[in-house]
Image 1 (spheres, one colour):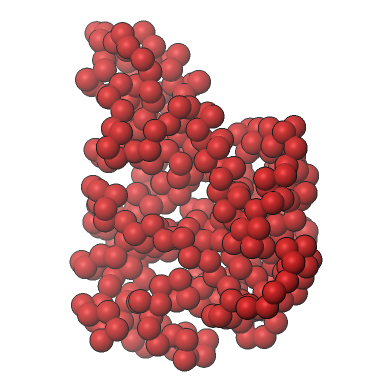
Image 2 (tube, rainbow, N blue to C red):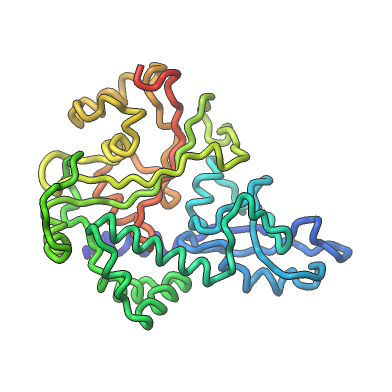
Length: 341
């Protein structure tokens, strides 16, 4: 790994979000009410993992009962299996610091959120994401499934504790490296039909094609805004499209950008993109953004960064991927009035 890549990866792992966490009024049993907890939460972490810090802080104010921690932001229950940094990027178009959240220990909204039994649930959600990523990359998740128990524990602890050195040492055994050349690549819309063994596929993946696991959080909005602080607020997860759609491209050939990747993930928004060159796509972005028949990217954020759309997609993947080997992209897009018109 080159020095620049190491520095970028360390930057991602060191990323943190200042939180100001209030106990919900309905769970406060003391006067005066407890002050909010101030916590620096890792971007790559998960909100339920803050429980060991929050439970002692609020314990004297809680009513009797069984504790099941969950969080909300402006009335919206937060999905615990989405990394904290992704939640922040998605929900705070105009970033607020500290991020004001409300914590609950009672009344878990099981009709909205999947059950969560604390750290164990988060761990297995992470391991399942690794399996899914391995399957996308190599067509098999056997390397993750065959991890030794000590390696599995050490890998999870490295994510919890933000230990990048240990994470790299253990994760390298999974053979999930997916891009060699940072600055090239061309779309490959049709997956290979050849019959290869899993081992052969793993050995030649970097040469033949790269399949990038992507989780895209899309909010298609109808109203326009020029300032991120004026961005509309959503109050239901039904307003967000959660898209798992891998990006596939060869590691030789035409320059493949972040914009190309977005278009390949969202063909319903860019129905004619497969017939255009990258230069034509860039010209279209510059010349036609105001035409209502074209979608307009209002916000694209990865790891708290708003990269330019012409940046090489391979650089984004190599440097901004989460520890679950998924690239998490938060996207606000102003949809055309009639898609494909």
